Length: 329
Ligand code: NCD
Image 1 (cartoon, rainbow, N blue to C red):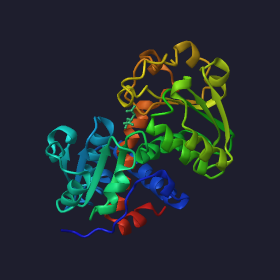
Image 2: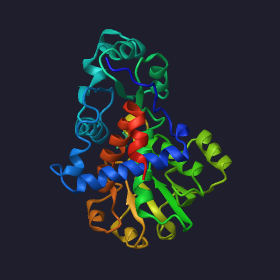
Image 3: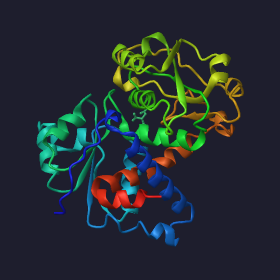
């Protein structure tokens, strides 16, 4: 089987500024090519690039966007996909097999494994034994680094980098892994051409507040941080990006339901015209469908960007030399 250079994607901590620049440049090229249509010559240029390669998607947790966009990305580049979407029920884990044994075996069947698992650190554990690259598609309440890539890509496309701007996270900041990854990434990219964000505002019920470890990491980065228990008009007005999240009920089933913090249409009216509302989706009550009509609502475009960012990422992992060539302006 085609031997690939081993590069895992485990945490946003590994992403360098030049690498992100290259990835975003390629994602933008792919997005523009896609806009020309799937039968266009521009899109056809990419359609065979990963042709003999196989991606294994091994998902122990539910997923719609992450799994399907990774699979669509692989297929759009000519690669093939082997998929287990319900590994905690249908894979040999039910017979008592360990994650590491499964990962060792899977490595013989493909060229890259996309793994979603309910345990923090599972992707790193998998990477320590995997003969092929592991992409962390969410490890419990830990990280979701590829979601952070498409989140940041969406912000980067929409906001001018020469203004001071605030990113406000709303909802379950304790268990929401997309929040953890994006907050860390943005804090590290302050004052670079990749992120205009100079302030982070965290809005959550007390029992869903950001963990102390991440809070300290962010404080050390020097980014301005603010906390609030409510989403009030003043915060909405000051936010260039409003990042809504749902309560991760499945992670703490015994915890009584906290009051949802909702972005009502009345509140959304307070947003600046060039602000954007993001959500990793799926949404619950925190983001009413009426808000979809607002020009600032960008979450469906954000989800679509997942296709381009994941295509670029697969090209980087499976064909690093080609990735470098394709990113050159
Ligand atoms: C998120 C996840 O799985 O962490 N979804 C996603 O990947 N887009 C958010 C969530 O489940 O709430």
